[in-house]
Length: 249
Image: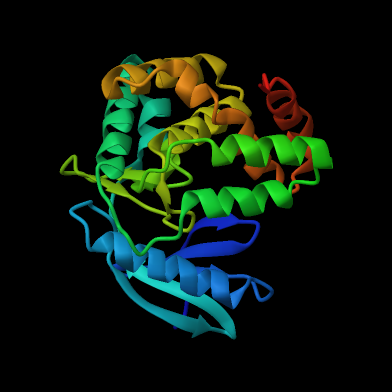
């Protein structure tokens, strides 16, 4: 397989287009277990009614693990938002509707969000008292089994020339509480410095799902600790502010 058409580069992977296929090639030191888990996640979500790229195979490319999927022609929702500022609110509403559609599904074989969050809190480099408080808060949250994308942001949605929306990158999908996924999306907008967009997004999500804003906000310190476990020093101060504002009871 000769790959030279690069679509995107990330610190741990390079994504290529090969005809009607997308080939995501992971770095040599990337965990084989994580690659196989991502492929398994994608195949399980593919069994729902959601529009996502079809998984074709897991392969080796020049000794590196790769996931081969259907190529979806189009632009990301992020690109469209940037190119059409006058339609930003319209696109944001479509974004929220898509997230709600994702969360309307259940896939019982997915890993549990709660288990993943407990593990991330333990790995976040926080002091024992803060970890205990976050674990306790997480244990007190209602147990749900909705599909949670885990990285739901406009760059992970492709709009085709026929105006169909496909959701990509299912590496972090779990089953759990939808408000945790909304809190993560809010945090992702905030990390990009899009404070107004984050607030507008959260208000729209809560209105459409009839969810109290305070309920979603209770997840933010937990999600911030999860993000902290990635060890990105440029995010640490910002994330610690979210963790430190927790009103522990």
